[in-house]
Length: 309
Length: 273
Image (cartoon, rainbow over all chains, first blue to last red):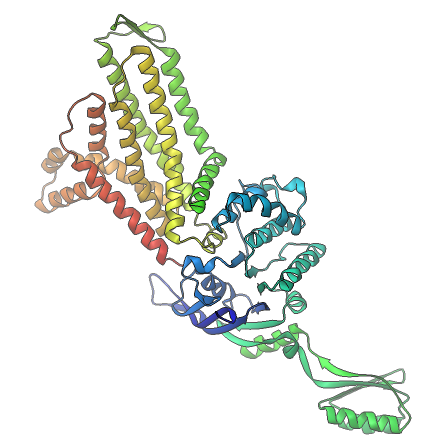
């Protein structure tokens, strides 16, 4: 049994124009490993190839070369898609269906028998926070947020081991987003692997433990959110430092600022930071705070995309 | 089996929602009511006494002949007008499946592409077949009760009409998979329905065509394309209890339909969405 929920090897997709010889390499040789039970974010600017990657993973699009496996099985085989729950971006659920009817249809396609569907549907609708009066309302009357919720319920109905979500909180209000995040955290605790494709970097940072950044079809960066956002420096804040000492400290610091008697210093290494602490303490100054600097995922993303772009 | 049932049921739901099913059902019911209340047939001791429509008495020969002639008219209306309407209505049902945002979700399910497409095809076929059977069986019962003529030819004719629709639906599926367009599917299918009766007039057509090359092309097209006109002749003969000269139009049309559907399935399997 594979240790990975998702494994791709040299996954490549080239779109060729039917009439001319023009080619567009949407996904270029991506080899990715997503461990079982992880929460994994896929990031990238518009047109980077994220959706094509996800479509190949689900066998909606055929790769030009390379393979995609889910729990060790090639997803081109229908049975290999059994453990996957999927919520696409810009989904178009048939508007003639009711919320209940839609779940019943997709549940049947996922192999759930009538009894299982009867039990699971109300459970899932309640889990995603859809009001009971909406159960038998046509989807054409649903708001965008309600459609996202019912779409998530659809993805969860057959108890998938891997959840692939494309912009799951698109159109959902902040309360709803928090609710969806809580639902996903609950699934994470149950060991479900969650693969999130989102433009909302803050959301990915809050939820995912690992991320991959795709740029121009290539895998630009992978790693845990903690590693990627870990800064390389140390921030030191102290008070009552005399002017002479401040000048000495500034000379070795990467950056410094002072305000109302408090000096803030940024050092590149732990050794430099420790030397500064020693110096401050020996001069009777008070240390307000000392810690490693952290970048946001957005900074990491911009740096990666900027550098690649 | 669960997935097949769901796909067929979904096609019915969509047909209901688009008013397609109810449109057909309404037309069929109107025709049945006409036969039930407007067409008056009086049979006395097994012989035809009077036949009247809207109170006007019609010249008649015998009961058997009257029933078979009327049934063949209904069968022809159903065959040509019904098929035309069915093609028009079904093209949208097939292409709707390929809409972006809908097809991805279907393909992500643990159901093979062949299964998905054939499930939709079967659902669509059943929507039309249900109405054809309703109309044919309904009018067959009405005629039977009114005249005691229970010939089976009319019932068999409904199978021929359903068969022809199955073939045309294969074309709709193929065009839908190739171009995602209901309009193109309708145009291509109607073109086949218009061209094939012309090709069926072999003797006249060969007289009109000047070169041997063009005559060969016309012959080839006749044998390759479905034979809508020839099958309508078979339907009439079945209803009138006349022998069928050749079943070639049926099996060659079946080969065309099978090939179109197989090509559609093959293309659907290879396509990226």
